[in-house]
Amino acid sequence: MAYGKIKADAIIYDNSGTDVERTIASLASSVSANSPTFTGTPAAPTASAGTNTTQIATTAFVTTAVPTNSAIDARADARVSAAVGNSVQAFDADTTKNDVANTFTAAQTLNAGLTVDGPYKQAAETVGALAIDLSTGNYFTKTINGNSTFTFTNPPSSGTVGSFTLDLTHSSGTVTWPSSVKWPANTAPTLTAGKTHLFVFVTDDAGYCYRGAALADYVN
Image (tube, rainbow, N blue to C red):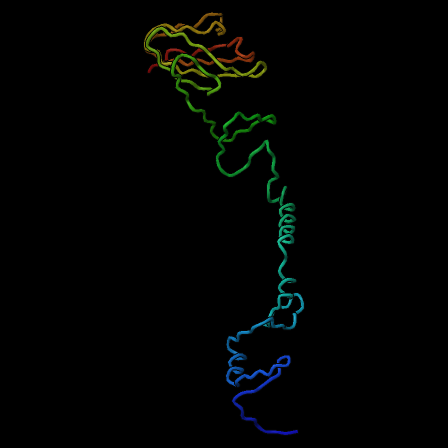
């Protein structure tokens, strides 16, 4: 056994039968501890699952530690399933629940009843001509200044109660009601020109009969 130092500028090694010469300087730069660059397919020991140190992580370790997309999806599905009915409301196509005001574009059937704690608002619908369309609202306003004949359209189906209020400002002229309107004592109210009147109508037979009541002659 010999001890000491060897001074050389290069070394020659056998690469599958071919002599390859490398300078000592190139070898030193390729194995520098500061940001070395490897070529080919370098290998390293694979750490056991759960290792959390600064050692090098091989592709085998990463594959084991990072779940696949299917595993992630399965975990997400499990968490969602556990939350539904608890922290997340179960989906029901017939209901809506959120923390903002809801606007419905179609009639809603509330067959379990409706409880309102707070103001109930109904838009006042202005009657353009003299036809009151019950499908558009429940409170209507109209000003007349001559003889006027009203008509009522689109009442709810028979067996369903429909009601509406007409806020009528009456400057002049007479008012003619549909023949389906029935007044107390079968007598239509007498109106004073230049006053405002409130009329309430109720039907439960698809508009065959409207029962009317009047609060007449409010001062404008």
